Length: 235
Image (cartoon, rainbow, N blue to C red; front, side, top):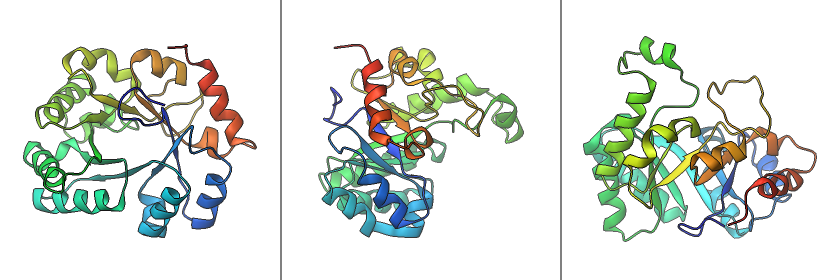
C-alpha cells in the first residue's frame, strides 16, 4: 500500500468497452494489491453501476474522466464522482485555476475524502504535437506551470509522465501525489510517446502507477502485478 492516503501503488487501467470483460479481469486480480482506473470508454459504456460493483469487490477506484468544462459544471461533476465513492477523481489543468478551485470547493462542501488531481499534459503528447495546438512554452515548461497551478489550487496531486517528475517534484508540496500512466514493464511501441518501466517510475518519484495492457492482456494478471511489486526496493 502507498504511504500516503492508504491507496495501492498500482491502479489497473480497465480499458474495455464491455462490463463482462471488465468484471472478468477484476475477478482475476487482488483488490489488496491494486486499484482500478475507470476511463471514458468503460464509464461511457457501463456507467456508475460498474463503479459500485468494483467497490463491492473491495477495489479502490480512480475515475479518470478528466473533467474540463465551466467551473460550476466541473464542481458538480466532482461531487457526483465523490458520492459514487471513488478514491480519486481528476480534472484537466488546462481548464484553468478558476475551474480547479471550483472543483476543490465542491468536494470540500460535501466534506469528501476523494482525492482531486489534475492532468497536466497527456503522455501521448510530445514537443511537436504541443506546438501544433499552440502550447509554445514547450513540454517541460507547460507541465511545470500546470502542476504549480494545481498545487496553488490545493489539489492533492497531478497526473503526469514519470519523465516529468525530475523537473517539478522539488517545486510541489510534500504530500503531493504523482499518478503516472505510460508505465510499461518492458519497452514497447504503442501510442504512449513518453514511457518508463515501473521501477524507473518509482525511483523518479511516482506515487501511483497506472498500468493497462501489460496487466489486462496477460495470461496471469496477478503474476504481472506481483512481479512489478517484487522489483520495488524495500522500504
